Each structure stands twice: as structure tokens, then as C-alpha cells.
Image (tube, rainbow, N blue to C red):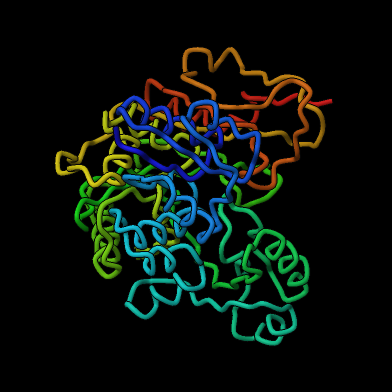
Length: 398
């Protein structure tokens, strides 16, 4: 029986634990939270932070493992690569994963390798950030270099907003470093979705359209994605080619990626994020609904060094979306109401919130109550209903 260490036991990671068990693995998880739900599905649990590389390596060395999986977790991706390199397990290069895991090093790498990328500078103190304000034409984006889920991200219109943006970004940065970057006006929807490479070749991708709320609490917090992509094949292939060039430059091997890309007004491709892990918010599950490709299974096979050569491109069928269920105000959860108009569209709802739990006004994905999946009969119905999801799914709080 193959022994697998999985980094994290959150609700969104339970599906990967279950899949590994179905595949006949003995599953061990580590997580810094003592009450994580994954421990009840796994064979063993250790309370170790997935971002503590040395502690996870020390644990892994004792467990006689066959592989390590990081599923749907940006912070744990470098740890997985670090431990796998030390133990000789299949992995993408640790240094490459580190490049992808920090927004400032990623922007620098893209610039040095002739990719389109916004001009960016990173800072550890507010004074230096303000001193260099004249390097930028406003508006600019201010972000923590190492956060995920849109935490601490703000678009600011002038230097008088630096104080708030700096403090908000720093609050979510583990390494206490922020990046200021040029704002790129995107054309159409942001491209979002997952992909998978085998021996360095991007053999599978499933691009979707990321959507935001017009009346959201914070502008740059996505509410979800919908599939299939509205882009034509030529444009999708152009994005694919840029992603492949990046994977080749980074000497990436076999594994899953979460992809965030925008096109500017001239259709230039900007790779905003390439996470060396599966997407969250049930993206792999919707990908499987739409294409039949089980990205979770392939992620586990890759970690164990098993053959993934059977993976082939697959076009999505049907019309799908996910949705981050959220509250517009802070309080105690009373009920989540789904409009009868969505009755025939509803597929599933992944959450661990219960009546009476504390919920927070939605400012980043960490405030989401969970993720819903919907299926639609047509593109017209899909775009009509996703534009009204904040009215059709209502969170009632006391």
C-alpha cells in the first residue's frame, strides 16, 4: 500500500484525501489546525503547519512515505516541493515553485524572460513605498507577495491611499513584504482555470471566465468562475503557448496548475498567477463535470511517480459555474437561501458552516462560507444568472 502525506486537511482538501483512499493509498495528513475535517477521513493526522518546511520534512522522514501532495493550497506548494526534493520524490523544482509562489519574484522572472508583465516593485516598509511613488502612474495594485484568495489586494488611485493599502497587504503577508504593480486594464473576463503538465508539456487546460460582483464589498475579490471560456480557439491557443513557454523556462515536470491570465486591449497575454497546485473553489470538480478529466486523481498519480501519459486535451461540455457563498455583513449565520429560480441549476454546496457560526462581511475568499456549483442549459442562461447570483443566493445573519 502506497503511503501518502497530504499537506492540509481543510474542507476543500477532503476530496483529495478521499480520492487517495479510493486509489488504495494509506493517507497521512498534517495541518496546523487541531480541528481540521480532513483528519476524520485520513488514516493518520499530525498537527504540523504545512508552511513549516523543516518540520514537515522532519515528519516525512519518519513516515516511510511514497509521495507528498499539496492540493489546492498556495502556501503549502513550496513545502511540498522542498520535502520532495530532499526525499527524492517526484516534484517540480523547488526553486521554480518558489518563483511562482511570490508575486514580486514572479513579476521579476517574467520581466527577465521577456513575458508581458506589469512593472512592479516590492517593499518591506511604508516610507520606501511612498518615496518611490513617482515610479508609478496611478492607479496601481498593492498586494501581499505571498497571500492567496485575494487577501489584502487593493487598487489605489493615488499616493494618499498608500497607508491603508500597505497596512491591509502587510496584514496578510507571511514574509511581511508587499508588491506595488502597474494596473493593466483587462479586456473581457479574466481567464481562470486549471491545467496539468506531463514531463513538462502542458497536455491539459480548462479555461473559464472569472466574474466579480458589481456591488461587492471589495472590488478585486472574485465571486466565482464559469465555463466554458468565451475566448475563441486561436486566443486560447495563444494563452496555452505562453503558459507552455513559462513551464519550459522553469523546467517544470508533472503536476497541476491553477491559472490566472488577462488579455489587454491589444490581446497581449499577461500571466498573473501560475500556482503549482490545483485550484480551490471546486475548480477540479467542475473541470471533471465538464470534461470527464479527474484532475485530483492525476495529481495523486503524479505525486507517486505513476504514469500520467494517458491524460489528453478535452473540451468542456455544458455550462457551469462555481460561486463563493458569502455574507454582506458580519454576524451569526442564520440561513442560506437559494432562490427557486436556481432549483434546476443547483449541483452541490461544499461548506462546513452551521447555523449560529460567526460569519464576516466578504472581503476575501477566507470570508466565504463555502462554494456552490451550478449547471445551466445555455450560455445565455449562465451569464444571466451569474450576474444575479448575489440576489439569488442570500446569506441571512443575525
